[in-house]
Length: 215
Length: 224
Image (cartoon, rainbow over all chains, first blue to last red):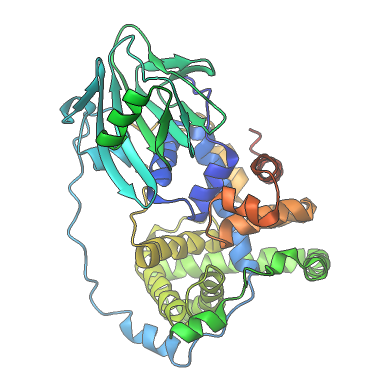
């Protein structure tokens, strides 16, 4: 398996610096679980963060702060209850697996159109993360983007005018791209999609439906 | 506390510090001066690594105090630059030090420098405490994780002396490149907003970032 579509540098840096929101962080982190090359890039960006921290002008810490911390060193830690790890026979890598609680097949899908189903995961501010399942040959209606849309293939594949995407590939589509992704023949295509603004569908009927569904 | 937070805001949006040319140039000049004391710097970075290992393995309180005096003011500075109020920044810097004490056993100097490791601790604490969001992270033990095909020795090599090589890399970046990297870490806004603030097309900001990171990675021996 070879990944050919990677997140842009700015996404990797936003993830490493901690300025990306949770939805974008989730899609980047899931991609780097599948892509050692981008994982190294994130480590390099974190190392840059270490150097920037080292070079920052130190701020004056309040009097007594050190003493206060020293007195707490031996206090028992309020440990969070261990998070039950999601089943591991799933081929969905962490951190996404914990968000969906197991395998893609066990997700309760909401059908939206013929051959097409989705499952919203969460919403933070303007960003939303959702899972998308497309039957072989099924497509998402022609749309453009008001903001940015990121799609990470988890299983199967799809293609549009910009290229062909397989497991681990991450597509970034911004306002200038109008596309109609079609799932490959031969199996379902599962993907994680993150948008920071609603999609803009060419057909007004579909636009209305999408609005109702919160797509 | 709210007032203190406004007063402590180091980057008034009307005239961000990084747009003031002379200040940045002075900073650059200092960086060049610093190059001459590189050996000492590398030595002190190694020392910080050793102190953090001592905290992890031996629960060494003296080592902890030295690390506190070095890092707590920097973490507070980091949080202030990201817009936290002075008192919250102080509290979180203390929390970060406490987290460092508790998790120090997980620190592996072959994988990251002490500064990098502590940066990630402070970053995650900020996401948790200020943004109240989860930080999605990979699980290195995950069977679904695609392992790195590179021989471990190479990865090891990329880590040793990491920091001094990174400093060299940061020094040869153009001011424009340093600016976008710094803003990515300290401005807490999406790149589209960074582009708007700098009055640049988003594509320009992205390409500066790409060039900057390519240089950093080349220095680290990881050619993408």
